[in-house]
Image (cartoon, rainbow, N blue to C red; front, side, top):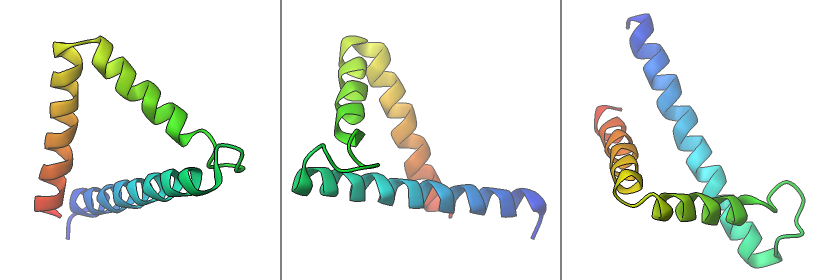
Length: 78
């Protein structure tokens, strides 16, 4: 396996773990509130990100589409 494929596989695994941690953080914040250490700001940051995408209109929608395309493509190739 070439070095490029190894790096690509590692990055896909890091992204998958990161998404799982974000999902876990959202669940922890819903269950225990925003006062939980380390997980306390995830919902605030996520709401801020969605608000920013909403304010930017078509450009935000295009950026979101590109990010979703990249995630879907990485799942197919991995």
